[in-house]
Image 1 (cartoon, each protein chain N blue to C red):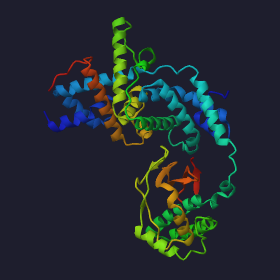
Image 2 (image 1 turned 180 degrees about the horizontal axis):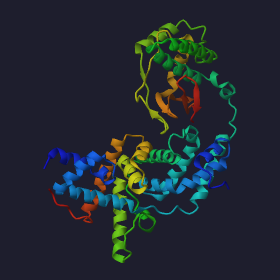
Image 3 (image 1 turned 30 degrees about the vertical axis):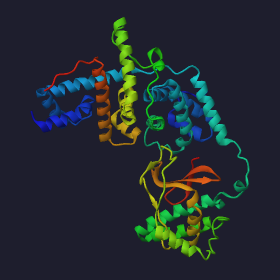
Image 4 (image 1 turned 180 degrees about the vertical axis):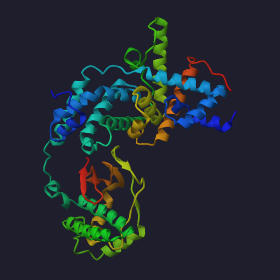
Length: 194
Length: 249
């Protein structure tokens, strides 16, 4: 197997020179991250694995046009979110599969490990997964990249091919929708008014 | 309470939470937060949502998903590199296949339109070079396109008809995500002084062309064209000089 410490750009260069193993190394390096985004975007691990494969196969071609002006990881985020948005558009809105949640689904990590907190954590995780699944894909992508993947706004703008202003707006609206869902589930008490 | 500051703060709260506001805006927001309970409550709500999201975890990769991923990659690579069955049309050189000739011609048409619209000495040279290049490419067009140097009697009428129609709006479909459309409803116009070869290519092309659009490809202005070749859809990318840069699928 390829030296796993090789930089992304080195592996890309080797792949473009005809070395498929270099691309495989790159794919395994990013597989979990791509799968994670796909899962958060699509709400199904089966579908996430499917789109993960599609993403890397698409990258086999598009990597030829990777211009190194942005980082390869940002490039991957871009291809991945586009693939997910395409999938969402294709299937419109399909409710999250409950079987995907629980131990194998989105979990909310509570600070305490007690049984009650675990139950709240599970409920919250399910609620967030459900709400994410219901909000528009563009908002979903923005909050997933920001709050789950931890990207800076500028990287999100690049990944989503949009402006900083739009990114700010989408994150804000996405968070408000999540917050509203949490509030309605009474996990957040209704706040006072001015 | 200053309504203007309140509205501004409401819009900026999420960015403020992430430290993505300027120093001046931060000061405005913080001053407003001191006096507005609603905005403080909203900030807490957004913070809770962000924390809940950041606390989300992704399930582990499914068993053997890495093996399946590598298999998919190898299969795609094998497919990409598999020898293609030789068909009659495949025996012909790439540029002699009517729809590709047409594509090249159309790319040149676009360029000529652009060049003509912004005349300059260098453009004149470029146009002349392109006209030559287009003629060379489209010359071998066979069967469905008239021979470049011998336009048919009906071709003038055909050109006039095209000019009367003038524009063709093509449908967007099957455009890869990484291509960024510049004009979402680009129209195709045949210039009055189009070379006969370009006209011939244009005449041959429309029935098979699904979509033609200016895009950013590798950060460069390019053209994407989707057309059918014997019932199979193909997508091509031309650079801004009308040269075929890539066949995407």
